[in-house]
Figure 1 (cartoon, helix red, strand yellow):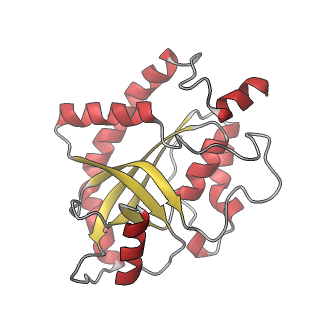
Figure 2 (cartoon, one colour):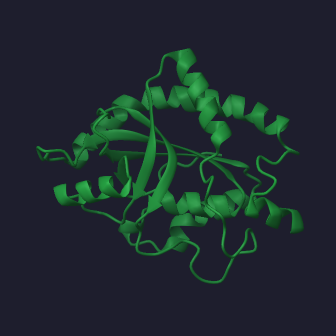
Figure 3 (cartoon, one colour):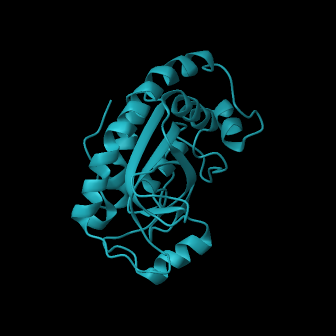
Length: 221
């Protein structure tokens, strides 16, 4: 199942609307979610056009997608230690080496938008631990994780910020950079989907971490 675009919080949608597609995916039996986004790069080692594998995120949205009555798809207080599946991250690294694809790794900062960040905001987000920043992804990933769906995420670095010299950015420039990097990301994702199906079949009855609080909750459901 694939989505063309997504609902953004800055467009005026509620968090329930933003994450509704993930709820539908869960009901359809989806086990693995692949997400991508265009993001601003704050890590000095990043370049425009880089692909950053998301290893973790920081939720800076003003509303939490799990706020309200708890859905019975997961616990009231889900553990978030391994939100982005480490097996899928290792798989991406292996494919990237085989295909000579340059990958970066880091933390995605999710913010409300719709404005791009000020230089001071870039510096603050970097200080807090972010490597890229964008206006999506985090709400959907939280809900997917709450549902027990494995997640793999990639950011396309479309602009740079937070450095000594401020760089003006426009939506058109972001789109252009994303379009140039898209074929490389597509190649990576396609191969990952093929191999992740084999990985899923081999680990269908295995738990990555038997002591993980979320796994313990699932065994009691």
